[in-house]
Length: 405
Image 1 (spheres, rainbow, N blue to C red):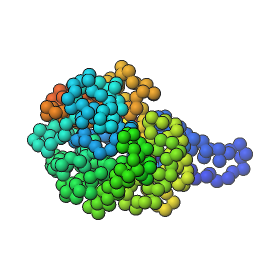
Image 2: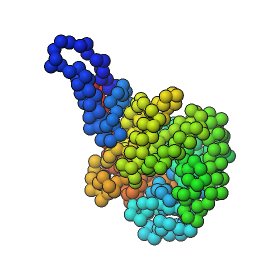
Image 3: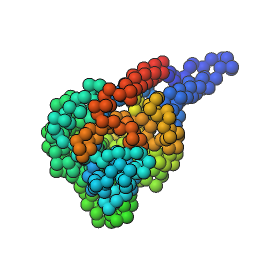
Image 4: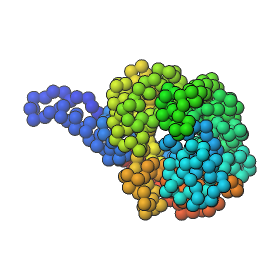
């Protein structure tokens, strides 16, 4: 939706009571205030020269296709579910957040998870689950997550089923097995891979791994695999993004290395760290200032807490910064014990689909409240499904109305 503010300076007049500079500055300040009030995020306080705010509606379903992963990152939320390798013999109430694998699920101690996630299969049951959620919530894109999706031996077939059901398909990956499986996925219709960059040097990657796996040699092999996967995805014509989280100023140099290492064909996405709050946002501000980045667009997605600001660099390259705004489901979130500015980490981010070891599909709306998951047959007719539909429609209407001038 277009936001237009005419910043052309008025012609000089002989009336000393009119300060044309002050008028122009007031217009800029008013627009800054409007953007901040509407979208409630400090990243918008300094943006006053946007010609376009784009508002779309959330149409993306996240699907956890596998739990296995070859990394042991200390900050992993594992899509809210227990690490299957450590909890396959456990039942709800017995799940452990840390086990022999060295992997973690950081919200498990308090999120009420009742099942471990089993792999998805490209069968009729999966097809029916995709079709059912598409029909009730109007989903148009499926985003495959894990664990590490490229470790799934039938990932290409899963992509093909999703495409046949009318979905665009994206994947989030650490790249450890992408070079092997991405060519077949591209042929099946994979549109985009978001590669998560947890370290640009072996030392950086090792630093965020469980202490048992904190070796530079192992990290170096993982980085080499990631770079091969990025190269293969690019060669196959799949859209490629490199996602990097900036917790504080100490991570700014990582972004500069990524810009130097990868061609403009790789879209760089900067993610703020919710756990680090203002430290992360301060670091992003410093990074953007150092790059002489110029804001081009604010893309707000009605019905999800995530939004993106696009910037261009002096050489014409585009980077995006992803933030989280404080969006809630009006009824489901109202009485939640985490519903405050400190404890709620991602707000209402969207719908997630899981499969348990018995073959039951579960639909979740919050990785911090996995106790809210419902079997898919219950979910499609539930109050929360209706609430999501109504909230998306209302927010789209409100945001578009507020951003038109």
